Length: 317
Image 1 (cartoon, rainbow, N blue to C red):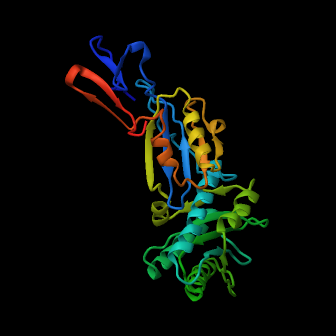
Image 2: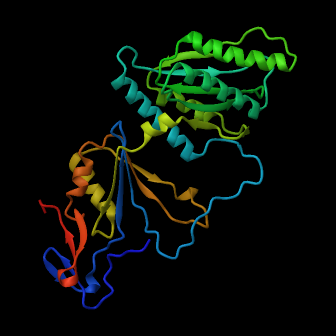
Image 3: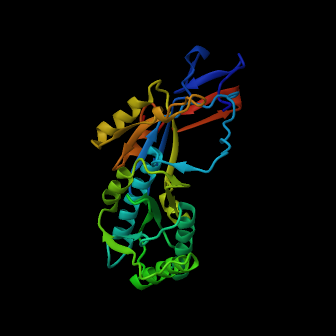
């Protein structure tokens, strides 16, 4: 990433706190703090390293074989847990009667299809639910039973009547049984109201480890994706060579908890960039503390008069 803020002309000077400084004392403009805050008050603070100009562009790999996964990735588990916590927040702050999410488990009787066919059945079931409710928010996770049959756990903050769920899944399975010459009796999805769904779903995403499933092991609806997006995103510039000290100062002044994140072990050799940071369960007041810290800049801009770079500090510095 080209940094247009660095002075290369000997006639230009750095201006910091109304004092001119030499080029050898230029501020560290690559020590960034990336702040993301979500609708439920959680935040993620990372310290991304700069993407220097000339670094080869990363291209997605070309998949030659069918996608098969033995377990959920750490990133996938984190996304599922975060969305479940957001669902919990959503139902407790937007629904009048029930303050719980619904968990729908779709399974098969004696005979069951392969993974690809089962996921087509799941898609058909979701289409039927979408005909009933306009904005169907959901997350589904695939799991294998001991007998080898795939089944799906669907977590949703929406209320769906039991008869809609039962008739939708029963009709799909009945058609598949008839097509393959099997005798169909009945199948009923398991539906339950779950309080604190983030804790409840954790056991499902951790116990099903070494079972191969063709294709994705989970998926999130577009409406749920939108709900899970950060409500606030800030890139904060700091003069500190160690931006963690800025965060630690802010955390100490607010006396709030922070959990360290280190996903360096998941980085590939061709992309060794480390993304280190913290997860903050309750971020109230944190962004204000970060932006008003003495070692962060409120604004940066080049003013033409005198061709000097002005780093504007917070007013209360």
